[in-house]
Image (cartoon, rainbow, N blue to C red):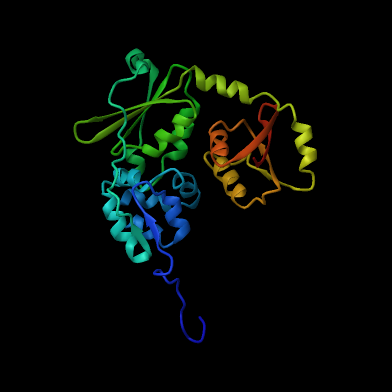
Length: 283
């Protein structure tokens, strides 16, 4: 309060122009009040109130994607966000591309025993988030197996996330609006893990380079997906000339493409089973 007046941001001074391709994370950075405006559009958005999950998913999800998940339209977002200082683009709203209709080769060769089912509808109905359970199931897949997630909406951000990790995906809609989304683990996923397990050749050199400029954390006792979330949270506040030294139980395969997307490099050293060291720094 200044001189008895509550000062607020003048939304007319700096309006952010948005469209169907605008990331949810960009909306929240511009105005944190956008969170509750978005949540009010659909009960399926309540998971965004979880700060760690929000940090991971909001950076991947556009207004167009979120509209499909929430069963609403991009125009509904624009109407809710306009009072908060956002301005919809005058360009036509682009449709979010649907999953490819042709059935991929892996689907034609799957046997009943190769498919692991996970119905997340009861979890969501109970107000819980199934993300950590999904990662657990994915981590237990053997090459040649597929995880079939049963849901009442298309998990577009998850499709993108696991696609970057080397999983092949396919989605189909059954009668009644039930979505079956398949995540197939091929050999390329396994080979990526094997490559990451080797000790980085310049490990000692990088340790010396960042000596006195490292923050150390230990995520070995955290349950999934908290190790990944915690690391990303720390990196958000890491000075540009510093490195993050992480004590981990395993090579975090889901984290590595995320680091690349965020322009971070990493070095790793698997000392023994359950004892992995990571050094993460800005590229």
